[in-house]
Amino acid sequence: MIRQLYPYTKGYRHWILLAVFCSAAESVLELMLPKAMSNIVDVGIQSGDRAYIISTGLYMVALALGSLLAGVGAAVIAAKAAMGFGANLRQAEYEKIQHFSFGNIERFSTASLITRLTSDVASVQTTLFMGMRICVRAPVMLITAVVMALGISLDLSRVFLVVIPLLLVAVFIVLRYVNPFFTALQQATDGLNLVVQENLNAVRVVKSFVRQDKEIEKFTQRSQLLRQTAERAMGFVVIFMPLITLLMGGTVVAVQWIGGHYVTGGTMLSGDLMAFTTYSMEILMSLMMVSMVLMMLTRAIACGRRIAEVLTQQPEITEDLSDPDLAVENGAITFDHVFFKYHPSAQEWNLTDINLHIPAGTTVGILGGTGSAKTTLVSLIPRLYEATEGTVSVGGHNVRKYTMKALHKGCAMVLQKNTLFSGTIAENLRWGNDNATDEQLRQACRDACADEFIDRFPDGYDTYVERGGTNLSGGQKQRLCIARALLCKPKILILDDSTSAVDTATDGRIRQALRNTLPETTKLIIAQRITSVMDADMILVLDDGHIIGQGTHKELMETCDIYREVYESQQEGVSIDG
Image (cartoon, rainbow, N blue to C red; front, top):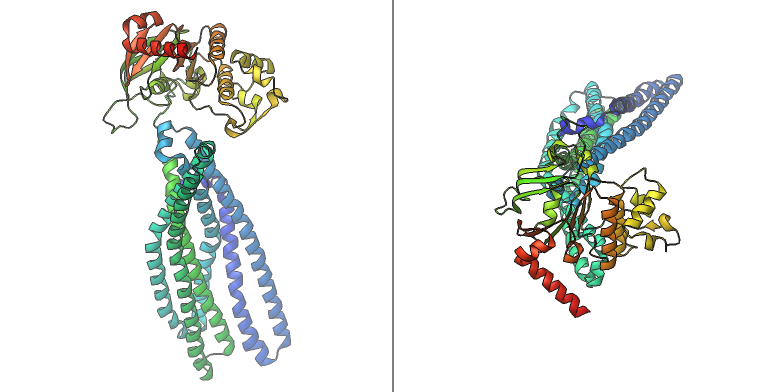
């Protein structure tokens, strides 16, 4: 895991080294103070040498200032390096996710990916920050203090032969049992984020069905699970602290008891006992700091593994860069014995042996019941999913030969779920073309019949759109999404039930505009109303992943029983409404 995350320290490695140096210097300077104090007591005070006391005191002041400056420098530099590392890691994760297929994202879940981008990265970068400070400071303090203590009294140092093994055993026991809890803690965080995300995204549905109490109950359950998991994980830390305090107190008592006898017997000076006691505390404090960092490191390792899973995850859909300049020249589409299923282990195919050729510029209507794989079929064209078997070709080339950028530039798709982003209407429209002029925006909106409601807004195209377009109606969002797709000027335009929220008259005007403004663009229109596609050049009827009917409206009325039954039932509904 460390090897996988190390590259993201690039640009901050020299800061890390400098922080390590400053932390080490801080520790060394700080540990020189007790010995200087010992000299004041044993030499200056006993001999009454005021000049020695003053000079040594000034020396201690210099040591303290040097330690202070080194400590402040270490903290500032370590913070800079850790925050930079975290930024690099988040950037790399986010860029990796952008290359994920829908299948990759579904494998992790959106809530889990958000957690991995936020709290997991925060945990890792905090551990790096603490590591540069404590993981350097503690070993330097430990080694230096041990050397200084041994130099004062080898006999008294035998106390450490009892205390240090006990402390190491305690640390080992805690670390062994706390690791699984930290992994479970992050998973519980994923579960809580999932509930929050679903509730906020579907807040209108929740309120419409008066499900607030159920959602609160669901949130409470996940929140309680997170609390319980955190309590179990932190319980080991809480138990560990009194144990450390007990060992430290016991060590001080032992040092004072045994050292007091040495002073009384004349084998040790009182100043040396003071310095030895200070070094004993420094040794135990350094061991405690190491143990605390190890516990933080345990959680960081669990988070780091989750981050590494994202960074090492191979996108299900990869690009063939042998011809990066290959572009979609026309909208001809060919399915050659295409089979598809969402999961390799699934028993049933979602699409079965699809053979289809659509000439460039053709308008194709796609009909079928719920679950007939209409969306799945069109999703294979821009490679939102990859065909499991067979080939899909666009513009005479296998879709796998295009870069994703080139393929998506040639294929515009308006999905079933209309997505708008916070910003103005003009900013949302320019997702289709960053360089679109105001006139091009207006023309696209006229073609999508969106101009009629935009012109009624006081701010027109500068009207602010809330996240998800919550301040717009369903039909308004659909028409804006269609206008956005038209600005791409694609070779292939896919409308996945994109006019379901508009009336039939507006639907007809949009289809007429598409024929007039995009005559050479291949248009695939998924619809529930046969009247929306009955004038198409070709109509496909899907059922359970099979094409059971193909032809014009007239041909299908004669050859496809399901098509004819649906048409007649819809016509009867129109007559009754009339």
